Image (cartoon, rainbow, N blue to C red):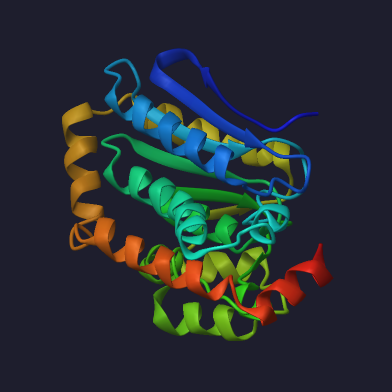
Length: 250
């Protein structure tokens, strides 16, 4: 199956945005761009009440950045553009006036953890362990860092960033505040997602939009902050260490 970002309009104002990539839902630049655009578009449509962000397949939620694309980056401009893709998705989640529910059915690595942190309410299965592996390839979770730290705190973010070779369990992620609930399987997860989505869709749109502004208060500078972080990652990805590490892990 080919990679895609697609949108499904469900009843009562609930809209799903789903992404998929055959390599464990890794995110190359084109998918990041399409994902940011989908979130932006849904946020502007009056008929959309609630957005569900999910990935295809029944295993990995998101493996983070596409290593195939990372290894091809040859200059600072290209590196900055690639990492700006993650920055744009996070900022679209932040600025979208609609509440976004995350559905995490499996493991989340790197940028996948960033997506889970950027939504407003995230539900997962017990298989949805998380890991920030960036330092092992000579980079760091710089672009997604503000979103992850905002959700789980500096101490837990530091633990994930430093202990980069080990997964932390979905229950650990729930205890730290990344996940609101953890379910035994995808079927129960879907019921939980739809229950909270339907409940939210029945509430006042004005109240939801105001609540979202409150949630993200103090993050107004993220457009410039995440652009700076993207440039930082764009420089590091050019290092010989990173090139060797990427080729080793591909």
